[in-house]
Length: 266
Image (cartoon, rainbow, N blue to C red; front, side, top):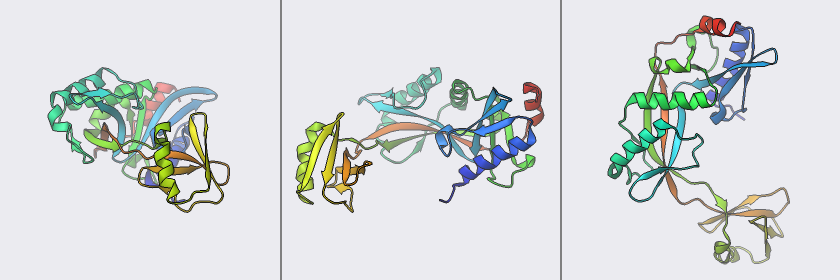
């Protein structure tokens, strides 16, 4: 498997920090871009947490629901709402006619940068992240390539923007009301099958494997650990509005390693 540049950066920067400081740095979450943080430990004690970001990067997002007249915070968001979340939603609702018709295209939200920086800082504080390390390079890293600063300084080293877009919702297990329609679509492909309901999920058992997991235009199958047995899913067709925070690294790179050493007595 070919690694993405941000994945290589996470590996390289973790190795760099382990060589540079007298502490243990561990990338958490594996290759999961939503958990791109490094835990810092001295002996067995957790000292702090560093966010690792390669180049221009997403800093978070908020999922919304529209009731036809305004946007509302959706609990599908990965971060809890805070006072800055409410400020942003209030702004969107004051310009609701501008954003309600946005389909899949992305448009920038013209809102105060201060609100956006404060939202990002608040989210990081909730995750106990105190520092951020970033670069426009992903490998062969040196001190001159790396920005390493406290989270509270991000406005001096990153430009920030907010993008409004609509994102397709994920596939879900088929509801019972759609089983008859699913059978109608499946009968066009094969008629020798069994369907049973287990723990509110529908399982399809066939006598042979399928080469195409799409059943009609609305349904699809996902494999289980049993051969020729599949979960029945309904494709996501709705789109939820969401807003994405984007950080763009400026050119004034600074590596505040001495500040880091002093603060944590390394």
